[in-house]
Image (cartoon, rainbow, N blue to C red; front, side):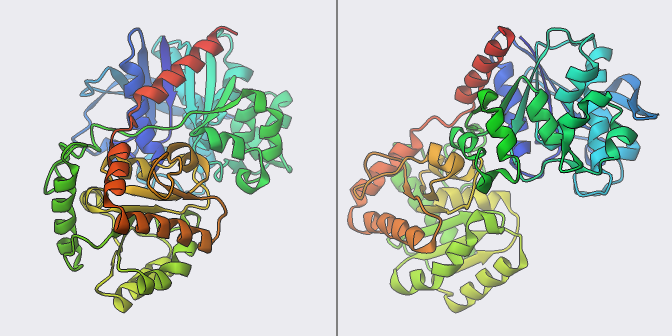
Length: 481
């Protein structure tokens, strides 16, 4: 099957969040399936262009029409990718060069990614690559299914398009004049993109794509409710027949406690008791906590943002540390109010709390490996990767049962049986504290049950093989329509 994947970011080349991780792993997993030919289109950001790690050659150039004007697009092929995925970057210095480290946030983001969306389709024609399926992601490529249906059917008569929502909060809003001045779509598509008198690119993609997916089964259901959908609940409910969820995987080659170079000791599901003990002791020493092997170490690696459930943790943190003989370690950066809170908490409980307000991938891996209990009380979570990373390293998650957290962490009972972690249903601090205390009770009073739960977490298959198979199943269904 010929598959074209289009996205605004993809690790290791350019990444700002979870979408970048998915775009690193999903195309690679699809390319490992026999008979597939996979290409990935990304913007040629200046950070990619200037990096000697990503050598490219120009294979084509073309003019992309945006409204009344035409813009240059260079098609750059990465020359050192060896896993079967062909990576092409769309080059335009005006739109993607000299923007600094940030990928998004410029006032012309709408125009930049309208250009990118149309350039991806033009590039496929220039490369003589007419895919069976185009898979596009989030608002930055939301115009692809609309352009495909409205203006490119002659070149792509049998191509089907899947649109995947990773974060519905960002929908690609633009002024109503944007439709004529930039998009240049036929007038009959104005209503497709119109929402409240403005252009909404994500709405257009939901209406014109052949299939709409999101990154977990539960999140797909949640998106039909106003609490989660940021205004698009009515649209998604109306198109529920083509909405489904596929839970993401993680890169089990990178997140591997047997080989991770960041760890002071390696382990697997047979040797984790000794291995995690060594990692825990080294981690406690590294972050300035007392080295106490029998004291439960609760950890969290996160962006310090409200929707990550930090308001709940802030509400219970002092009570938790007063009442429990436990340690808390936080790693992340973000909103000033949370950075200040956790620094103050560390000052108040220097023997029990460490706050590392920084971005450090190596330390993150050591936290996954050295922690006992992983906290993830997110208000909403489309999929979430951290809970799967933690389980891969034998760290038991305590999560709010929402989105992908509900799908990947079925609840265990008080003996640690029947599930993979501890969950709470209602988004409130008392329920979070109660679920956390159930986990602490298991750790303190039933160590054999806690170790059995850790082993079960480590034995789970969180690789991309399962979701890639699900994507292929949906691709085949689309092609049979």
